[in-house]
Length: 262
Image 1 (cartoon, one colour):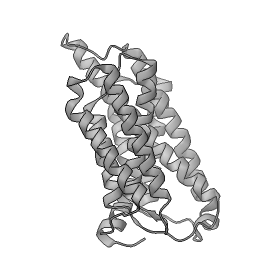
Image 2 (cartoon, rainbow, N blue to C red):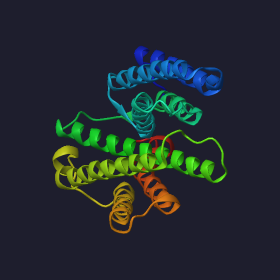
Image 3 (tube, rainbow, N blue to C red):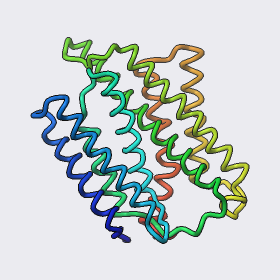
C-alpha cells in the first residue's frame, strides 16, 4: 500500500485530523462559538491537506481522495449554514467522518496517474467531486431532518430550525447534485475518448453511476410531481447516494486496494 509522504500533505492531514477529533470528543464542553472556531480551523487545515495532495508529483488519484473531498464539501456547506442558521450545532458525526476522510486520503492516496490529455478533464473531475459532495450534503441534511422529526414526535429537543426549512435545504442540494451529476455523465459519454484516450464503454462505474442518476431522477420527479417527503423521500435518497458511492468509490477501492493498479 502506498502512503503519502509530501510534507504539506502529511502535516496538514494530521493537524486537521487532530482538530476534527478534538471537536468530536470535546464538543459538549465547548460553547457554540468556540466549537465553530475549532471547526473553521479544522476545515482550513483540511483544505490545506487537499491542496497538498494535488501538489504531489507524480499525480496520484484514488477512492480515498473522493471520500476526503466529500467530507470537506459537507464541512464547507455546514460551516456556512451554521453562520446563517446559528441554531445548528456542530455535529460529532460530521467531525469524526471528516477526520476519517482526511487520514484515509493520506494512508491510501491511490495510484500514479498518466498526464492529463485535456484541460477539460479537470472540469470533469471537479463536476464529479461536486456532485458526490452535494449528495453527501443532502444525505446529512436528510439525517438531520429525520432526527428533528423524531424529536418532535417524542417532545425532545429539536434542531432549532423549522422542519420545512430543513426539508427545502435537503431537496435543494439533491437538485443541484442531480444537475452536476448529469453534466458529469454527459461529459464522460461525449468526450471520453478525447479525455481518457479510450472510447466510452460500459463498466461497473458507469452502470452504478447511471443507476444513481435514474434513482435521483425518480426522487426529483417524485418530489415535484407527487410531493414526496419524510421517510419515503429519505429512503430513495439513501439508495441513490449508496449507488453513487459504489460507482466511483467502490470501483476505485477495488483498483487501489484489491488489485493495486491504475
